[in-house]
Length: 376
Image (cartoon, rainbow, N blue to C red; front, side):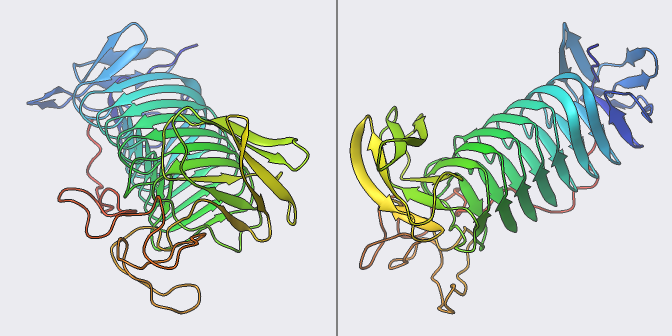
């Protein structure tokens, strides 16, 4: 049975899909229309003009389509949400998705949590003029299917991003596909991430390194953050190729390890797979022609590409060897995998400050207390 929730503010714990512990809001007239009153039980009753319903599509006219003061948990159901003002789903505590099918179109974020955002199942397909999935604290993906096309960041965490499993495909046209303001760890899953042009990238971890211990990853972006050499799984840094090129990594005998078709041209591509074995030599094939070879002699190998020493942010810091690193964009910065004698390699940030109005790499939306941003 399709269970739709029509632009409602909840002040208690909300569990959707099994409709357990759901509350009822008060009707509140405002200049932008009225909030919608919904009563959940055996039947769903809707009153008010805070949302409109046409067929199976729910349009949030006042603020968020679904909003909660406390935790919001989805255990099933089908949700078609169109947020014409703010977020598809917004919560002042944690959002947990254990199941359900979501189709979200939002002016702001598809889902935004003022606390943690946990995805353990379900299918989320979202389009946003801002960000896709945002957690002001941590974002954890334990499973499920996520497909996002956004203007700014696809995943944006104030503290940490941890990916254990799941199918994730993200295209960020002007921001980072995945952006953590703290730590970033990938232990599994299948990830295809396209970030915007410099100073943005596919994988961004502000002032820190990304740890890759598992999964299959294709991350295409101009300015990707550095991969930790403590990672348990090997990653290769490829350079720039053309949109539409078919890229394949094969063994010396020609057995395919991974292949993909580039849907956008960016300066750098990170590829990581459990099939990349230490000590083995591989070929990079472009449109069935050999481009180069590389040998996996460490957890991070350059094959024409590089990654920024700093994961973004505005200030310099200490490098791995205790050397002071220059701020992003400064002349002479040496990047991970870079094989030049000075200056910046292909695909890294241009010199100087970013143009007026553009964020420095790794910066994202302001992470501050927004505990009252819960109106529908």
